[in-house]
Image 1: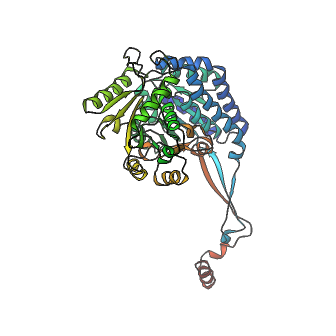
Image 2 (image 1 turned 90 degrees about the horizontal axis):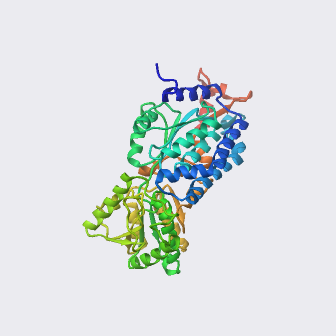
Image 3 (image 1 turned 120 degrees about the horizontal axis):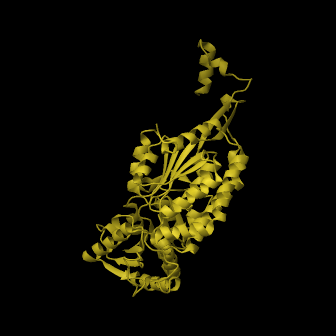
Length: 472
């Protein structure tokens, strides 16, 4: 007999509760959202400290800015709009079926699963939770084994605030994650690498579980010709470097490489060094600069650097004099020049403070470079020429775009967030998240006055005349 707290039994409790209350009232959903919000607000310091311990070091200020603030915003947005989202939506009816009425009703899917990555373990749990709870679901959440302190604290806090058949947190290793993905959820949302996303999708396929995959890939930043001509180059470099250095580059939508007009490489480096010096005056000891999360990730990033140098690429320090420290896993930001496309730093998602520069001759070449590679999760374009901006928006395909800055599209709760192709499928945030975790039930209401009976057998002359009118 399975242990009463086994993963299968924990899921079964959620599923049974969901079947018993298939359409929770708005007040119930608001109570759950408010409980999640209070949990985060009342334990802000403890959460920031747990994240810091998981990373070795991450600034509590960065956790408040990048995790707690957007989590509160996502929950508040859902609460503000919940009544409108829950309301049935009237749809048009063809003339031939009037005076019947049509509508779409949003119904909870039931018991859903969320798999959370280690890089932003609070926000990437809370944001999909806000959507799933607003939609009226019961939720099982698998936290990352690479953020054990955060996972343990979150499990403890959730157990205090929610019944175990409303929301439950799962801890554990890769084996537990594999078992989790094989549960017959009504929907499964996974955030993580493309490689692991493939395994999750295969596991979910056995149960025909629909999935939302938030993956990653190579997100480009393009400094357009108009930014250079208008004197906005320095500002573009600043925003790229700041976006790249957040969480030491361990962000799924961090700029992964920079396309810039040929001949501006040294100007980029000079400005980037100024930005790093201003943000992290003593980066080797800065309390505001994150360390790499674990030894495996640190060794992976160092191997990218070693390979690039061995193959003739130029690796430039953006914090001259600051050395990589394997003991603390502190890795100062680096720029790569003349990095061949066959290098791992150019082929694989970097997930660290390494930034290749790719010069281009004209905007057409830059667009062609992006389009010649797998479609990215994010794209950043810097320019003030409307024609150039529209061209990039229309001629490239990516999950999301921020123009003249980085990262910020993910913080807009009224925008869907998701990838395309290798960078993901499906989306959430705001209404998009509510819809992802809902059944959009089509309802047609027949009127007492209806001519549909005229089309019933036996078919004769009247039927022939009517169908000729329909098909005319």
